Length: 592
Image: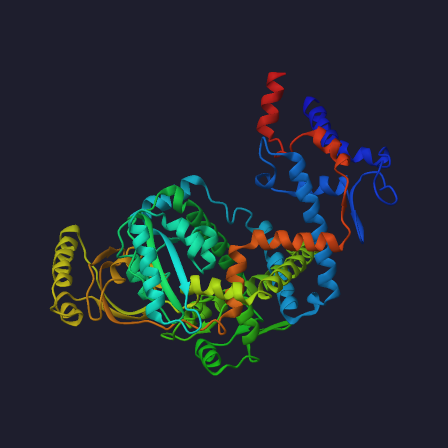
């Protein structure tokens, strides 16, 4: 009985705010007609009520509710403004036909199927995706030697644009004067703020923590040769002169459990869900969905068969063009130069993704046959998703329109972040792997391979004949892809020259020795080629500032009026907090 009374009291506290809708009176001095009871804001096309706010707060995860001591008035004020902006954007999205685009319809189909499979999975394998702290720690301890945090450098940058008619030598001389001022004691960051033509001047020249593989090779060579606090020599590029300084160097080290726990959790959760999906898919002995074979997929990618289907089922098919949209990235063949912009995926990764989609279709079919899909719940979640997705799409479009309207600002951002829009350096690698039976054999192999890697001879082929093992041609890889082969490998490969062998690594498959066959770099793409990518990258970095401007624009156009005095009841309830747990209730019962 005590538990029931307490729960009823909590419910009354949460819902008490709604009672005020029946007793609120007109707000003295407000323009126009007085708002109805319970209304805390109104705009052209609607109102926001205390019930709206209450429902929104209850749906928020605990981490998104205000922290202890936070200004509740400001929190409620921003929440109301966001609700109004989102409503207006949703209306605009529907009026402009965003819901009728092929892209959005494709996403609708994919999400509906995903929700259906999740519904089925919750019934057939409710434990799928559950990962304990003990499992994460065990995974970390098993892989601790492989989990490396690469060397990072806190880097600052001054950029001076070449003015029309200005000689490179003149611009270089001006940058040398800035360098001399820094060497005499002036602050690099303050000079970047006042002298740089780069967008990074708003961050005192900071381009953040840099690891190998992020910048064009010429810039990277300079940054990773600098001592802390010593400015580089000026570097002249096609459109200006650059000066770098490294403020702090964090050497490569073993990553801590705290650093890698989120990624380990995500990997373990994905593996758990993947295993459950494999089991359900295996039950589907007669799938109707099918995909093209790998050779056909490669042919379509190479020849651009955009309208050819790659996945087929009785009520649904996916063309190559739609498959590209589903991946959200470009597809390239092995060894092709990457774009350096949106993270192209190889045909290997494309094939793996297509196989996962086929498995998902098999699971969907099996769940339908067994009647394991809660269609009512899926429909309810789809309605929520569609509103959220349309609002987000409209918000992104409006923000991109704002950003794109200032090409000069975009060009400056491109110039100061050119590494983001330059294809990454690639290394063509070969690998010799030699298995061993016991520790003594492994130690002898490691000693021999270390000696070979430190000398120029013999080559990888000669060593393979001497020790046995297998040689793999790994093809062209960026540093990120090399890190996927082995997390310890990137800092070994990055400084290596063509034909060079790098220090051997002990892996689960034996001792591995790598050889750099060749290395290639790419010229930066022009601003015009990557303008859309530049706008997206700019927006990711300056979302907050751009959204504030968009919010003001939308609210002004909507004739937004806020009645903060109506929020008194919500303030009286107190800070919205996480729901009380059963254990906390039991403890309270014992105390009483």
